[in-house]
Image 1 (cartoon, rainbow, N blue to C red):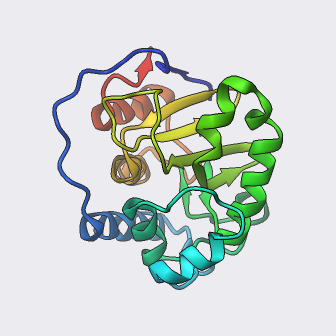
Image 2: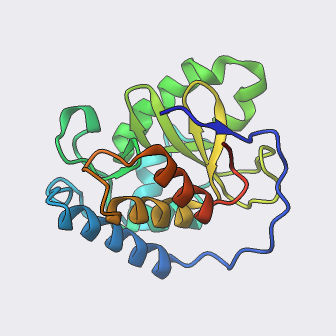
Length: 211
């Protein structure tokens, strides 16, 4: 499904609560259990969590920016998933994109920089964006340095697929949005009717999409 993101629309938002690793981990567990409740065994290939030092070491040779607390917390919960979505029946996904291990993220980062990152207007932004989820030439990335797409958002989650656009206000909003999608009675293991999906999306991430 293609949605029009408001990449050039600057949002005026109230201050968001400070990031909480504990809250993110609780949200990730809720998403995992929501998948399992639908009979989707996403847990089987999730890897053990990584310490901050271990993640930094795994990324030090290829990723140029310091890893922010949000990314460290994500990989402290689990170290990604060993099989990509196109090779696995039950991927731990944030909508379309499956949770990448650091090694897979390295390969995805190289692919991004060789394609979208080759465009001068996107090079500087994408150089400092970590691809934590991917599927079939599409990525969700977390900016690990400053970003100008949505200055009102400290660390939005950006989608790279036929463009470079903000899709979620934060990693926490990414997880709560995905959890509400999967929990919905009409979620069939793959997705939801567009109108329901978009209503949930906009509730958690107001102002992102135009209908």
